[in-house]
Every structure is written in C-alpha cells, then in structure tokens.
Image (cartoon, rainbow, N blue to C red; front, side, top):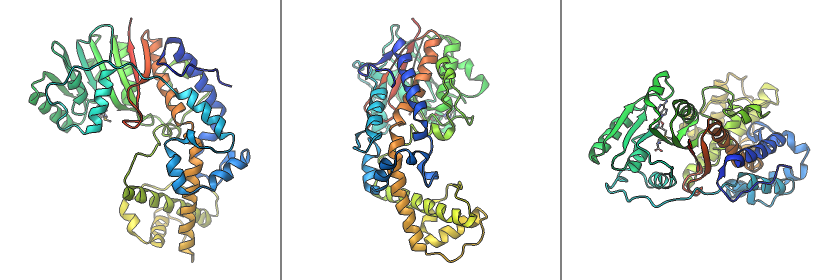
Amino acid sequence: MPAKVDDSHVLTGETLLARFAALDAFLIKHQALWKPRPFTHRQLPWEASYPELAEWLRGRSLEEAEQSHNQPCLLDAPEPFASLAALSLELSTVGELPAHALEASGHRLNVDVPGRKWQQIEAFASRLQFADAPSHWLDWCSGKGHLGRRLLQTGQQLTCLEYDPALVFSGQALSQRHQMHALHVEQDVLAADAASFLNADHTPVALHACGDLHVRLIQLASAEGCKQLAIAPCCYNRIRLSEYQPLSSSAKRSDLQLSLENLSLPTSETVTAGARVRRQRDTSMARRLAFDLLQRQLRGMDEYLPTPSLPSAWLDKSFADYCHHLAALKELSTIGPQDWSALEGAGWQRLAEVRNLELLRGLFRRPLELWLVLDRALFLFEQGYAVRLGTFCETPLTPRNFLILAERP
Ligand SMILES: C[S@@+](CC[C@H](N)C(=O)[O-])C[C@H]1O[C@@H](n2cnc3c(N)ncnc32)[C@H](O)[C@@H]1O
C-alpha cells in the first residue's frame, strides 16, 4: 500500500518527494490496468483477473459512460474499482494555492479575451506571491501576451516570447492600444538561441505552454539562474521524442516507462461539447470500432490496425462506402458480402463497452498527471528552488489547473 499522504495542503519540500514516491508505487503496481487502451483491444488483459468488474462495465450504456467520464472516482463499481478510486482520490488531491487580491486591471485588458481564458489568467495571476517583487516578467509562449499584460505593474518590464507571427503582431498592437511597454518577440523557444532571452532578473510565467515548451523553460530558467518562476503545465504528450524523458533524479530512478500513448492519458477527459459535436465524435468512433472488427476478419488477424484521422466529410458517406474506402486506403483485400447494419450496430455496442472500460483507466488520469507535474517540481527543487505545488482554479475552469511556483531562497 502506498504511504498515507497529507492531502489537504499545497505540496512543498519533502512532501513533494513523499507524494511522488506514493504515486510512483501506485502507478507501477497497477500499470496493467491503465496502460492498455480498450479502443485497441477486443479483450483487455486485466479482464481475466477481474471478470465481475469487466462484465459490470461492459453491461452499461454509452449514456452511463458519458455521465461518469469526468468523475470516474464516484462510480459504484465492483472491486477493485472502489478501492482504486479511493486511492486515486487520496493520492491526487492537492491543496489550492492561497490567492491574494489582484490590483484591478485598469485598461479594460480583457477586451478581446474569451471569458474563460480571462478567468484562468486572473486565477493564475492571483496565486503569484514571491518574496521579492518581480522586476521583469517573461511571458513564455505568450500567444497575444494577455497574461503578461495582466501582471505588468508600474516600474516593471514585460517580454513576451511567441513563435506565431500573427499572435506576436496582435500582441504588439494590443500592448500599444493599452499603452503598455511590452516587448513582443517572435521566437521559437525550442531553438538553440532561446536561452539568450532569459536572464536572472526575469520572472518567467507560462500558462499552458505544451509539453516540451514548458520543460524547456524549466531547464533554461534554472540554468540561467532565474530567481522565481510560475508554470501551469499542459499537453504532456506534445514532446519530440517517443518516450518520456524524466527530469528529476527521483523520476529517473523510477521503473515507470511512459510512451506517447501513455502520456496522452492525463489530458484525455472529454471537453464539454454540444449534442451535435458529441454525436459526430461518437459516430466517428463507433465506425472506427466497427471497421476494426471488419479488418480483423479481412486480415485473418485478431489485431488492431491503426487508421489515419479522416475528414469529417467521411461521416456523410454510407457506412458501407466508409468501410470500402477505408479498406482501400489501408490496401486490404476486397470486402466480401457483409451484413452492414449488424456490423454498424456492433461498432456502437463496442463503443459503449470501450467508454465504460475506459472508466477504470480514468482513475489513473489525475495520478499520472500529478506524477508528471511532480517530476517538474522535483527537478526545480533539486536545482535549489523552494517549490510550492497546488491548484490555481477549480477543474471546470480548466482541468489543467496545477501550478508550480518556484523561487530561489
Ligand atoms: C496553449 S497556447 C497558450 C498561450 C498563452 N500562454 C495563453 O494562456 O493564452 C500555447 C502557445 O504556444 C505557442 N507556441 C507553440 N510552439 C512554440 C514554440 N516552439 N515557440 C514559441 N511559442 C510556441 C503557440 O503559438 C501558442 O500561442
């Protein structure tokens, strides 16, 4: 059993290490439950060990799966589900970082910023408390620089780094409109010369810079001696390599190996979508699952065959045409006579089963995310930073709500 953890507080110092060790043991012990994807397996390896749970999940409807998707821990499913759900909750709960009142933004800065994004920015900004007041903000992968402008106070400087020229241009125009002195630089932060934009006086902030982008900041900022930084990570699977490269010595010592597919688990919760979009998404997946049954039959091989993502116009084809065209694309042998409506129905049945079986993997979504965030936090800790790790807002505002605050004492 993993060690009992204090789940009521922001993680700091030794509690970072203790939580990492507990999560590491939990994820390694149960990897057979969360690594294989129901979408690519007709039968999951763990089903033989837990037949009652498998049968129970497979018996539920698509609507029931949908309802449980974002909070699988609340599902009253047969063991070992309930015990794992309790552990998942215990291990992934992290306290909220204390908020301070932000100075009102006097420039109608939120004009042109989508409402949810602005609320995220305000929440992020309200958690930034450092012993020394920042003198120069560095907004990393800034987009139009909304976060940097929200943070900028009289007497401070702001540099925004962003590689999309259109966003750099709009960012510059917005800073001018608000009469704020900000430098918007068009820069690929992964390029070799990115280090030249960082120095010890900067306070880098990164709100939802994907995978390699925020990892690069962590490496450069610690190497350049930045006194303090704040990072809300996201998209852990957006990395150049095909395997996860741990940062901290604790993660380097771990036996947990993570593929790109594994790394996509933390961000696999479905976003709230309208009925039409949901129906389109479900139809596309049900068709893929039906085609998977067909291709196994055509190839005489009970093995998943990856298929490319297809334009949504493919869903306007009849199901038979869809299968014929996809089989041709994959250069499969000619399709003999088929009961198309039975096959299509089998795809929908599999979709309901897949979505319900996914709920077990869902229990490991947040623990894996916290393991990854802790790897970043522990790396900074090892580089001599005092680190605080907590949440900066509630999940509905953004599920990517972990925030790492690091400052050199
Ligand atoms: C998810 S957005 C976040 C933007 C902003 N921080 C926010 O919260 O609104 C990620 C940003 O990173 C930028 N980006 C992606 N790759 C980059 C790179 N290699 N160098 C610099 N910026 C990059 C994108 O253009 C995008 O603006």
